[in-house]
Figure (cartoon, rainbow, N blue to C red):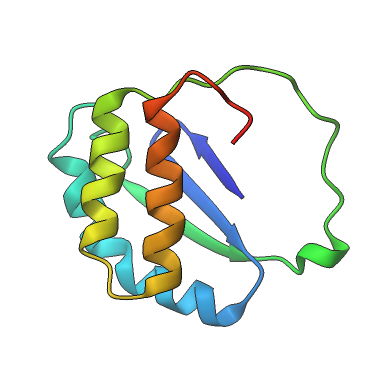
Length: 105
């Protein structure tokens, strides 16, 4: 899960292990974001842990979200620099959302 509010990006993960891995990556992510116009406004990344099996999703808000090709490329480039294969694959999958108008992926 992800939440973006003004300059603060919040990532919610199901595992303390993932939280630790992501916290380790925060400085390099912020550095990468600072060099890209569309992400430059993100100056803080918070990592939270939530047991997803107990998580109750709020009512769905149906809105189409568009990812620019530049954002998709940034995520792809970031993924290629990640050593963790699971995180790399997830970021690559996310980056492919910028290649299509189909939001059902």
